[in-house]
Image (cartoon, rainbow, N blue to C red; front, side, top):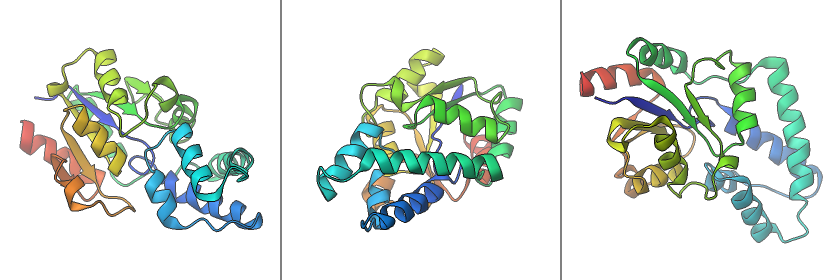
Length: 218
């Protein structure tokens, strides 16, 4: 029996990665930079330091990363304040199921904790999670296992009692390194077969999670 389910956030709970990518591309284009989709798929699950380094390596040290990121964050916050954060299918049903079965719910995301809290508030889910850990609270980002190991320690459960939900290559690698079962939830990025093999199970969307848990653990 599992005691806790650990959720990634961007791309898994909320469709924020598509919105972020579109804003990045639009703003960068006005400054003469062409940001291809593949670049963003490579960055999914990475923290700020890693993302900054990859942008600089690709476009040079003159690339105005901080300026574009600041403008993107302002526009993204305005968009979410106006229209709400786009919630992925099956999220609320999965949270209700976990709550009814007394399973701890945690968020472990590479996004800063402040951003996690903002998105949860936008979706009226701020009271649904028992524990939140952001990328600004760990030294090493995914694919390092630190965020998941720290999450289990904070919840005070053994790794064998946790289940991680991820949609990215970096997230699956981090879960595998932490030696915690991870369920792959399909999103925009096609995951290579060699990474898929590291996952415990692959689901099409979060709406399939309750039945999977019932069939596997009950």
